[in-house]
Image (cartoon, rainbow, N blue to C red; front, side, top):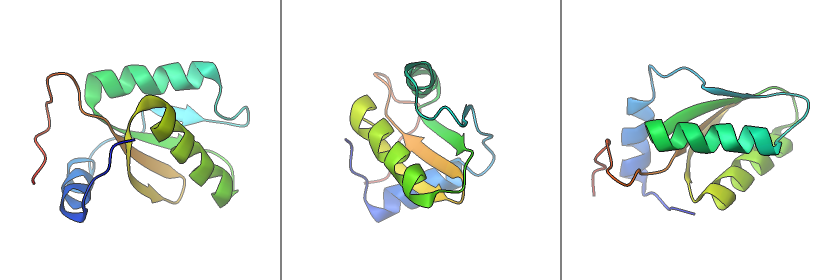
Length: 98
């Protein structure tokens, strides 16, 4: 899992302001197909929003942690039902501040 400092998280939150969720997680939860979609979108966009339907906050946190651990990504923000996830590409498009 990648770690980000506060300045980097703030920068990424600003970059994600106009993004729309590219992956939706419904009642079935975090299936293999959903993980593949998250992986594909992280490869092409680096920074993505994921919408998790459901009212269980602890379940959303567990989903965020599992995605980040299995896909070597960094959690940027969890606000309401939206998760913001970052993973740098082989040739990064987003240059993070130090």
